[in-house]
Length: 308
Image (cartoon, rainbow, N blue to C red; front, side, top):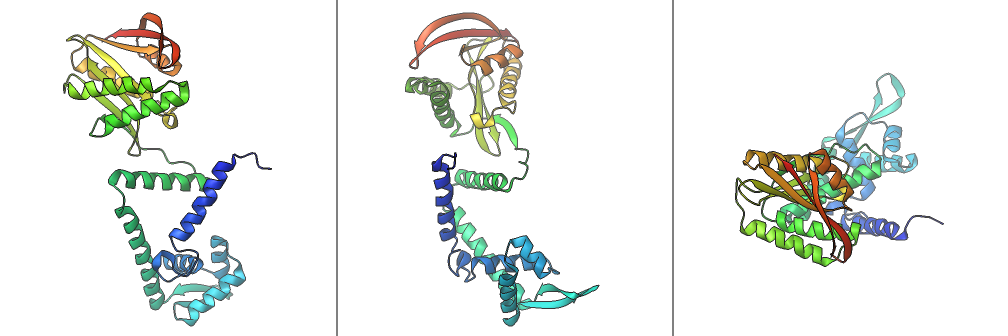
């Protein structure tokens, strides 16, 4: 019996059934083109280069050679394919699409493009980016290929980012630490105050992105003319291990220095070990701590500060 959770297995099987139905792969109407799935894939490969040999193409596509031979014969019969003896090997034949075959491929390719355009047109820009990222990630995982280096940036906040900050904090702290919804309420209050009283040049919200998707945050807020406060530092679980927490804190410190503050403070809890390690490494020192019961848990709150 498989030790894998049956829920992911069911999800993969369900998506496979959905996708084959969605693109028309079960019948003879792939992408609405009138081609079957195998027929369309063979035609696509033949259009990419001349000189395929039947055995080579069968191996590339994982097809039974006898089945592929019958399909290629049909392409020849309808005038889409030519066979010519390979140079230097009179026993082998090389394959090349005819002009009519190229026209047939263009019809298939345009149908595929129309379907993709229709899919994307139903989605907002952010949804399109999420879909593309998810499909690329799925292809990398399923192929076993090495993951490409993610595109990581840290930028200032834009409309919509603060809502993500609130949601991410509420979700992550509930999942990892079991904190209740009162923590999300606190984050919402802090974030709303930041937006209402935002002082450009004196305050900043930093958002870390990977491939266009928010995965981290850090806020610098004004406490006084000389004191800035570091707040709402977070890195999503999937983005941890990339040094983003350290980068966010360093950029926050650099901004506070440039803004003319003399000191930076922060409040955290002693169970946030990874965050505390970053604060220590970046020159913060613990100045006070106190037990408290918040967010449904008994905690030890800590105040840290560093000179700028």
